[in-house]
Image 1: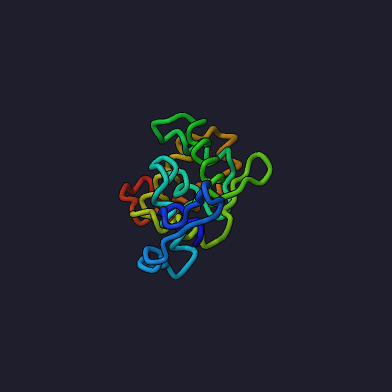
Image 2: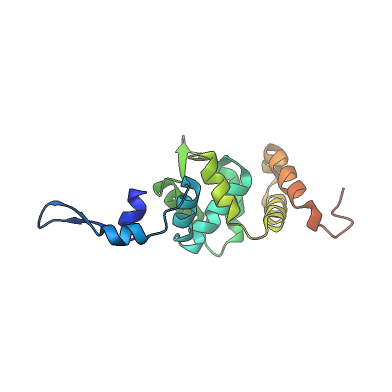
Length: 168
């Protein structure tokens, strides 16, 4: 909560008097959100669009995401793999996720993943897009190691599949 007050400019550090200052009237007039998830969502909405996209992709994959899978999905963006991973690293620096070892991204809390997931306007379409992209961009060896991820994503978007050849 204090961070949101600081970011909104209601709470400031004054170097001249060497202490924190605030405007209590502005703070009282500020709509105080009820939950951490709402605070996090407000913070997520202030992220750059490429960082928001990386966050939403990770949310679709669940509480943890392997960097190798995320790199395959970055081929959909106009940026390079490194830019997509840099966006995820920004998500980490904002505190939404943390890195486990060198290759796994994990959400800091379930409510943060749910808040990120709630930002996706068409969830089924996003899951279908992720499943199709993983299927199209994976080598045979990669596909064997992520087949359950691909199947889960395609299943979550299956209501949108209209091509009878694509349906099982």
